[in-house]
Image (cartoon, rainbow, N blue to C red; front, side, top):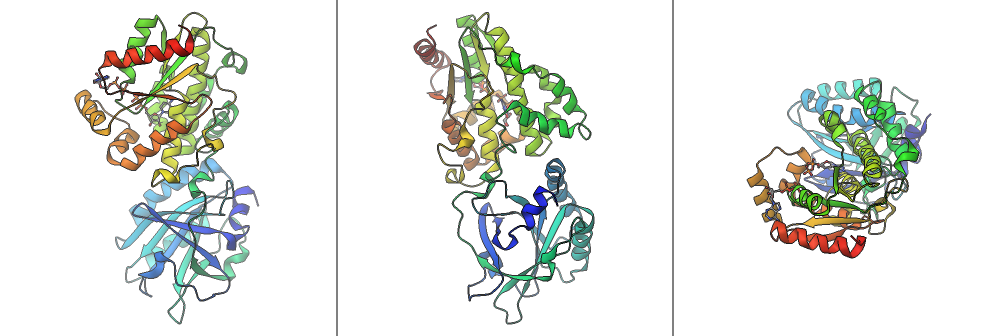
Length: 420
Ligand SMILES: Nc1ncnc2c1ncn2[C@@H]1O[C@H](COP(=O)(O)OP(=O)(O)O)[C@@H](O)[C@H]1O
Ligand SMILES: Nc1ccn([C@@H]2O[C@H](COP(=O)(O)OP(=O)(O)O)[C@@H](O)[C@H]2O)c(=O)n1
């Protein structure tokens, strides 16, 4: 049995399950004997005839797993009776890296169970899905979990039943456990590997790989300063980077680079693993361009690795800022093989003023940028992740004064730091 399936079944009874209801996680664990604990919150208001299931998506192939996780949601929403309720969930070994497996929690309050059970049984036989069902015990006090047999492997645990009991909030938010090299990539090789493995299902991945620099070129250190401008959409990056280019006689580059534009929409539809690998590679292509331009002039860069990492981290984690990996976590470290800019400026703006600028500009936005408007917590997580990234860390600049005042402020910083 290969890695991921083994990791699911290994220490099955040490696993914690997290169900997300209305954006908040509820944790429960399983154990062989019941010691009088009350039922976990998720189960407390259920009637004995209500049926619940957890569906965990796990296969030997992580590309297949990532893609199927998204497809499964569409399939379930299409095929389940309307009385079914679907919530995101996950299962993990507390504080154990790469132990997270994502899935869905399904509550069925319909009269008959056959449609749902047939659908789930079919999934366990033909797809990379492990299903558990939950029943109320005869005395009506406890809930038990049963793992269904699975097509891909002989699951010994199926005969066993486990009691579900409440579990404490883990020290690390579960989605931080699998972040490294799944949401954020720390080397060209790791990101390349994902795109290479996608080649047969996403032909565009091969075109992207062809644009990659040779390792030696991307490591050349530029002679002139490299200044990155970061910030949320509509904080004034385009306005400022254009002015800096004129004032300093600099070259202006962006990440993702222009040459990736034809494929960006394609990769934006993919699950995080593939989408983030695409943006990670964009930084290496931009780094090579910086190396070339930086031999002749100062270089201004509109978004770079801070954006890639901050959005990826903030999307992978849900809820308040305290769910982010702690300050100083290795998640925030700059990739050792990626060119380091001389200065990274983060433009910050009051949310209301940012919305006003967005309205005035009136252009289309990526889904993630729309999410920034609707979801206050997501915006706070992105901003905090930006601030926590180090090596180089960003210097925050208030972008609310006039465009010229912001330019002067940033020029002061550049002259102080880069001797221009
Ligand atoms: N300092 C500023 N004060 C007021 N409006 C600004 C300022 N900087 C930019 N804008 C306006 O805000 C909008 C968003 O700016 P833009 O440079 O396109 O942001 P970004 O590139 O970060 O998305 C544009 O309409 C721009 O003219
Ligand atoms: N270097 C970069 C740039 C953008 N991105 C992604 O692209 C999105 C924002 O890009 P955008 O084109 O809307 O940015 P602007 O045009 O607002 O500068 C973010 O949601 C990030 O997920 C990235 O991952 N890495």
